Every structure is written in C-alpha cells, then in structure tokens.
Image 1 (spheres, helix red, strand yellow):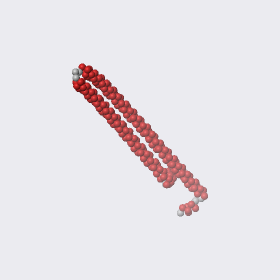
Image 2: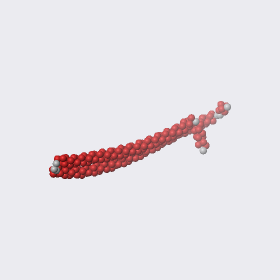
Image 3: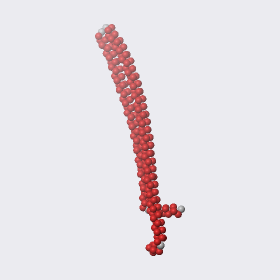
Image 4: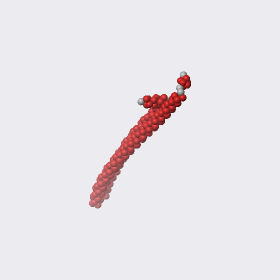
Length: 214
C-alpha cells in the first residue's frame, strides 16, 4: 500500500517528503547530540561537586585532626610541667632530709666522741644509718610510684587521642564511600537515560515534531 501511495506522488511531492524526512533526521541527530552534551555536562557537574565535597571534608578532617593533636600536645606539656614540678618538690624534700640526716650524723658523731663506751657509740651510729636507709628507700619508692603514675596517665591520654583520630578517620572514610556510591548511582542513571533515548529514536523524533507544531 505504501508503494502504491509513493507511486501516486509526484516528483515534487517525493522531493518534499524526502526533504522533510531529512530535516527530521537531522533534527533528531542534533537533539540526540544535545542530550549527550547535556548528559556530559551533568556528569561533570556531579563529579566536580563530589570532588569539592570530598576536598572540603578532607580539609575539615585535617583541621580537626590538627586541633586534636594540638590539644594532645598541650595536655602532654601540662603533664610534663606537673611532673617536673613534682620532681622538683621531691628533690627539695630530699635535700631537706639529707640536711636533717647530716645533722643527725653530726650529732651522733658528737655523741660518739663524748660516749663512754664503744658499744653505745655503735648503737647510736646504727640507729642513724638505719634511719638514713629508710629515708632513702622511701624516697626511691615515692619517685618510682610518681613516674609510673605519670607514665600511665600519658599512655592513657595517647590511647584516647589515637582512638579519637581513628574514629574521625573512619567517619571520613565512610562518608567518602557514601559520596562515591551516590555519584556512581547518579552517573549510571544519566547513562541509562542516554542509552534509552539512543535506543528509542522515535521519542526524539516525536519531541522534534511536537516542538515544530508548537
């Protein structure tokens, strides 16, 4: 039937029909190209937005991490200052105890010189040495406990700071993964739309005809 209809058409009508078909085909190709360009632009915008968001997030993460490290350094410095102060206090106490022991030794020696028997002198000297040893042992034990406590506090602070940094890194990594998945999903949606339009050129032709009628 189509062949009979075509045979009934004049040469001018055939040329006009072919020209119209050619124009519609060119319009469809141009529209398809326009859709492809739009797809590429939207894809670039999405990728750029994702890159900007990722960069901003990493910048914020770096700032927070640096702030945490600074706070940790300040806490460490405060603890070190406290430790140094305690050490100075212990040293001063040691000096006082040494001075007191020296006075005791001097007094004991004086008593020894004035002592009537060697046995009395030995007893007095033994008491002084025992007292000095007890003071020295007490000082060493106090220093040991102080150092252990300061070291334990420092380790706990370092562990807590490390945990906070690791948690922040995990949050940033998870957010990046979500952004990447969202970007990939948007790109796939745009690609599917472009492929659908490419596989159904009649839709493009219909749009062109509607725009021509309008």
